[in-house]
Length: 635
Image (cartoon, rainbow, N blue to C red):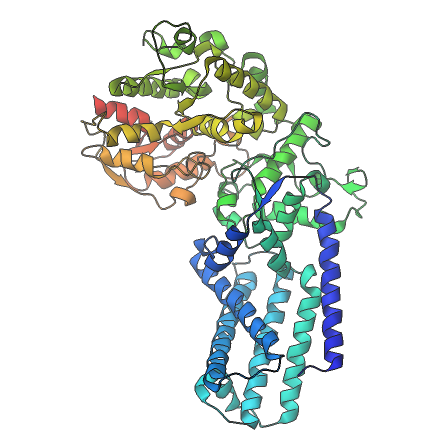
């Protein structure tokens, strides 16, 4: 039983822990306001299921061992302080369970320690090893105390404490030694509790809160910015919302984001882990740093995060998809870009012509609305302006073409192919034609939020005027913006990707694929179609429906797919550092020895086509949009 002095020490440790968490929570709450919902069922499912953590099976099992090996014995220890009788068989079974969980925790901790400090596999700052070492010390001293107890009093069944029994065989029957181990075990626990808020193990609290407080937008979405906002983007840590700061607190620097980030893997300076740790360092400094440019006494984020890091991001959402504690580094990068672009006018020079074209002409090519529908010339493509004049036409779907589909020669073919498919299936559709503007995705991802909202409101005005309800588009970037981001501006439509509609048409026998297009092909998962909108199966079902064509999966596919390098505005930026992402991905896809690389995104088609052409291959595969492939198979 615990003595009064022990209880005093416990109280001191708890007060120190509470004071530490209170101080850190005050820093978190200093961020901007963000409306969140509370998700208790989701938290319970997350903690018990470990689904996100199990995306990496080795680390996932190690975490399960540590998690349950920590909390279940803790509950047993607390309950054991109360004086109540327990049947002997139950007590022995509980002892066995507790010891096995302790052993599992020991295995998990050793695994994490090796990951942290192992040669060639460091997974974050070395300071993160301290709490792991303390936990190891707690487990080992606990087993040693049990071993000496059994050496002194070898009573009961050895199966109830197998590891303790084994250790007792090599330990002296010394009551003094047992007390030494017990006190070391006890003091180590107190130290761990007291320093918990100041080590990465605070994620026990921070990550739990991060999962519990849930955003009302889709993962990978961007924090809305109103015209009257106090801050234009993020210059200091206090310009982030408090949920964004909570995510920095929850980061354990495990490195899973780095393992999947195309920028990191192609030798760019960007590391999502470093971004989160740099934000955390700024929070911990509390504005006490005096070096570098400052705003209101706070160090600027650019003190730690360089411009080359910010502009290397492709917004592929791999970091978000693979974070085990649901952190989103992406929205912090976008907020910092916003400040650089709207607050400091520091847009990369190669992107300025495109932004100017968006401002003046409403498209990324600078062609103007007069040429928006030139791709459809002599194709008898109905336009909503005609449908709305009661000419007898009726449109079920608005076919959203997008800038790429309207102006880029490679993607214009895809637009014509989609028209062919829709007509073959008897689908009533129309386009906006000259009334369509860029959806605004490039502007928003590059940080020009005001330009995005200007373009979006112009499109929403046309949607409302024509009473548009259903939209189909070939571009996943347009899909994501129209479906997930326009609603924050008051526009709610049913938006689907072309592959989803075409897949339904094939299943319902409204179109029939007749001709093979290649002996074998592979599929590149577009980030904005897959990770952003979870459309993975429809493109595969389409490919498998093509007669005489085999589908070979590449190693990195579905939610582990590798970006083409064109998202996040990178389509208009030069790659000056490291390897070209599109070449890395093209080489990976071509290794299958396929004849055809299929994708479902105009950006991906252009980037991968350029990447394949830069490779020196005996057999160069063709890159084509799935919509083009379907149109060819129709004959």
